[in-house]
Length: 78
Image (cartoon, rainbow, N blue to C red):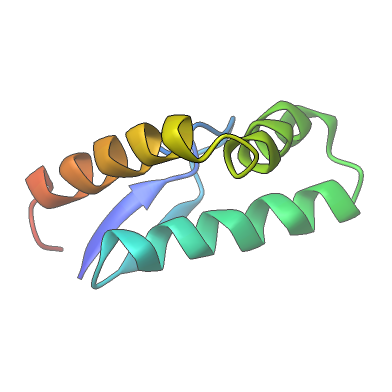
């Protein structure tokens, strides 16, 4: 199990996301950003917009995804 924060994933806060893989924490971040958007949290809106745009540009998204996976791989186990 490893931990990455919302901030490490491009968001504005230090909410911790834990997972066995980078995909786990990326999915947790996606759900977190969706929830914050639904609540009207303006601080998270730029990160949510960026997340939405990533999937419109797959090559650029792949760069972010690979960088996030590498960061996750370098983290120590919790």
